[in-house]
Length: 193
Image (cartoon, rainbow, N blue to C red; front, side):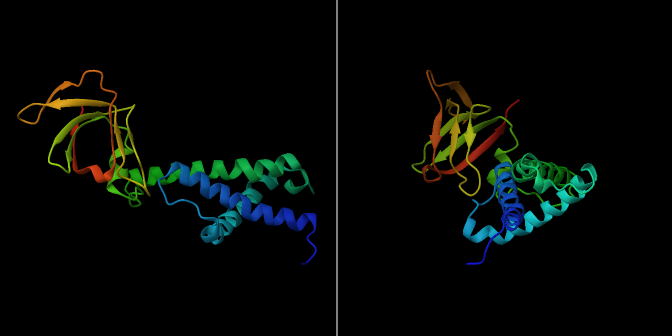
């Protein structure tokens, strides 16, 4: 095995670790597939190279002549851990603006994610597999899973439905309802006015 100097180890860390941290941070902000180290290391290396170039461009003018960020443990730690998270947040915000202006396609991987990540409240009618229908309320205390595992939903309140299918009254002492994708055929959403 070749001798690895401290500078070589720092260079490898500076190229690979920020890439993985940046990708992981972005995936926490945007529904996406889980990070798999064995499959995603080329992407992490490329992202790390981009971060390294951006950091050199941004940091070099701020440092005194001859100083290198690698020589300061604190600056190197900030670059390894904080800089990739900050870049992931900025990238997510930039893509969000571009998406809102319809300059790029919607980034939600499924219609489920598109609907439930909007942070809106809905009155919901769930059509169960056995033919029954259940009314519920989806709001701030509710939860819907996201890609890659959409379809699970927690409704914070259960409501009875009248003969016409309208919402009648909240079920007393209801703490909500948990649903798996295998429990229902369809979910209807109604605007919460």
